Length: 256
Image (cartoon, rainbow, N blue to C red; front, side):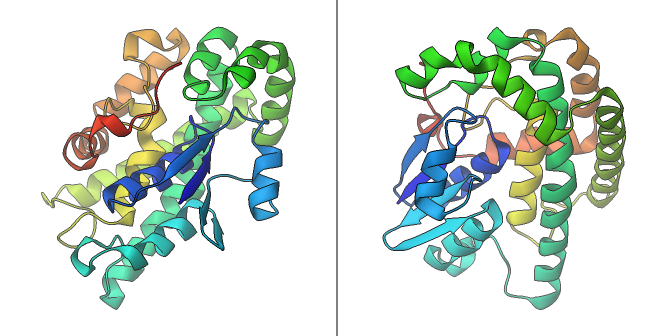
């Protein structure tokens, strides 16, 4: 299988983690933001990543990829439970995390890092080709303008998004308050996987598909929010799952 990615994308990490978790061999093709467009269009006819190619089958969207990969998994290892009620809970939480938490954590991280080109490119360039890495600084002004327009990275929207994320975290804190090991049922599911990936920009887990910066390395304007979210029950849960459920770091994209 081949997985087309933007290395920094938490949606791409979601697909990457599922492949690794199921023990499915794959080749990752990472590209810098913007440079991925012709490859995505060639593979899927669209412009979004991740895109998974499995022979003649091409699957776009991280959730669609997870559902497709479940067909390869043993029953006890699947990310979506067979029980109808549990499946409904997983689907509902996964949608909440993907469509709200992930959107806002992405907006927040781009808003801050686009003001720091060298730091942004250091994270975003992990694993990409030397050609794209060389062009990154030259193309950064265009990337910044494009991202600001597409992601609506203005100050007010970022503040609203962080508050919305805070409300979601409070909801998850409530779910975890009964001491449960996983969000739904008695095993790791797509709800847990999505939560971890969409929260990653806020809590900076060490076990991850790319090397994320330490707290002291992120822009000062981000540090208060990171500290706040790391200290929540949900933040601690996310970091715990990365330590216990994320497979070997040999699967990490190399820093080049």
